[in-house]
Image (cartoon, rainbow over all chains, first blue to last red; front, side, top):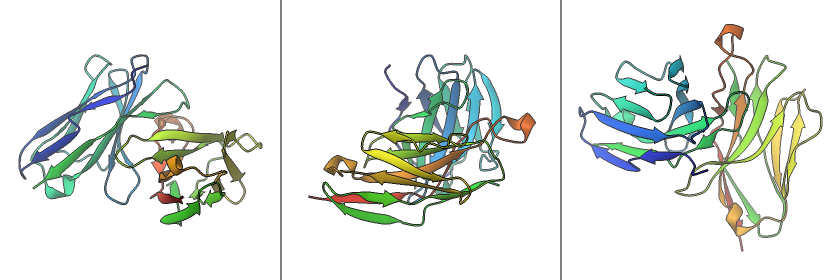
Length: 113
Length: 121
């Protein structure tokens, strides 16, 4: 069990640029979640995959955000035309089916200048 | 909509002492799950303890235990014999039952704002 990994760990970008983050879940986990965490707050749900199907999206996920999990393994989260308000920690988590523990990755810290 | 409230932004405890972190939640569901997660500084979030709402017995994991009061919608975390390594942000989280077809979510967690725990040597 190598744990959930995320890449990059830190990203600094200028407003208006596009960024893409990657998440590699624990290999036998078929569920994958993206959360966003701003300073002083708990994580907020963005979107969720079961295998390759994106089954749920939060209203927080504006049209500038898109997530994929093409082969049911790793996932990418892309933010287009970044805004300063997008600055946050983006967390990925994975789990098995059912009310199982979600294992979190270390996160990608995004700073939009 | 379900909400989770942690009313203590910061707490402090002396090493080897006991501390209790508070959490209340709001839901109309009868079947759900509650979690406490720990997030050490610059490190990833890990599960401390979980509680199924249908279980009357309070969950325990070594030095960590919960006081689950379903009627009061309260879910506090007690840390006994506090250690320096317990210093972290602690988040209370709720997960509802079922999927979208049942009017619920597929399992995303709803978090409180967290409590920062400091442990004094």
